[in-house]
Picture (cartoon, rainbow, N blue to C red):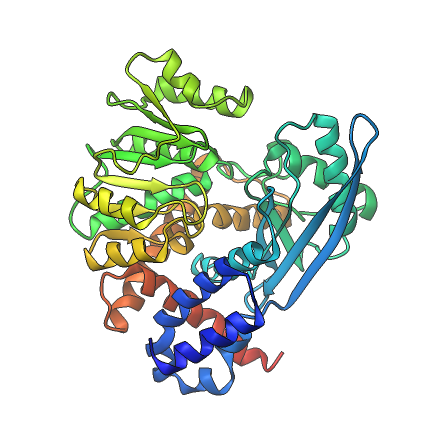
Length: 447
């Protein structure tokens, strides 16, 4: 580690104690940017990096709500508005017990670079609460969402900050929050993305992150004159991202043989074909069931409680669950079993040691800020449709998504080659994302 990077990280830790996820995200970016800062002394002089790691605004508020039994509960609400150099703050709302300021700062920081890579005019932000919808009635979820939005509405707007969904926030929660915003503000504005199709939502938005991660994997494979056709794949996570990644993998001729949820892993050597996928969608999205029920229905599948999928032999792997889920030993198992392509559908799912292994072994490794940008890309397209009071067809949105993912891939490749790290998508994504934001910040002055 250079003296500059060492001193910089010591200051980050001092100013932001106990925020380990944020420290991890910043450290990766700082290492990638050292040659950029040497080549562009104007970035150092303007303290671009020092400014970019500080959120422009952090909002913390209480969210009191009432259960079905009349009991008063209080949760914490957050919105981290990280960087608006390129456009309105854009990033999801996460409803999960693990939410704290450090997690949201890490996610917001990543979002700045991810949104920059999409080529769309989007700043970066993130928000959420330590509330969990699991085990709550629809009425309780509605009352919580209304209480949450009653405060959040003061700080967002179609030209200021446009949140989306994230873990724990789907169509139901977006609907309740949008309804409350509309009632308070007396304005039908595109202030949330992931809305219902009949009231401002975009086709392909639900599928976008999963589709995008697969499109990115396909582009990486093309650099080696290969494709997903005939490839064996594994997925972690059984939410929107994982399930729609399976759908696109099937469409491109691949076969998914394993996937996980928080309870364990299902291994189906015959593959999760289109018929099985439809069952899985109903199980997860309608019945809100667990994937062990998939193994109970299909004789070809086996459920392994508490197990990960990374030890299953595969050609490509798609982590789509949560940060730091893929550890160093998991990376070793993947490489030993012949996996040569990793495309991250979630934010920072691989620990630093795992990333180092992937880069060292020259695995096709698509980091989350590039590979999972499909979700925010279509969120940006939803904002455009809202502004025009118009809706594109499914085919149009999917074509635009694929084009954006191709451009992200190209930007990563070009940036990595320019700075002497050809084939390194980690450095390529960090450099390409940073330079666009840095130039905008230079031109907008010391603000």
